[in-house]
Length: 72
Image (cartoon, helix red, strand yellow):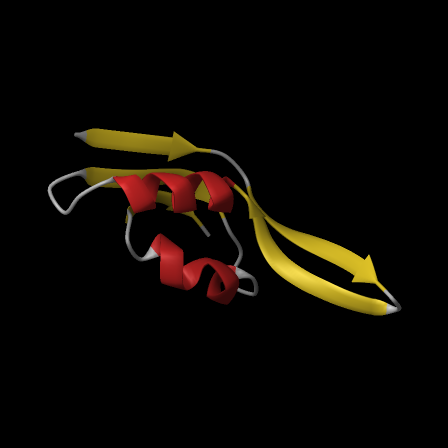
């Protein structure tokens, strides 16, 4: 199966007890869900934008996808 997931790669800033927690958000959670149910024969693509500063937050998951349609 070929699957294209389109969305925004955003960074969530969560403030709790005077502490800021920064986590990947947006399309990240859709990508995480699809990557967990697909097998090695499936072709997964992302259509999104992500800047170089935030890419390390997404890198481990996004490397499981074909990134031909990712704009930096």
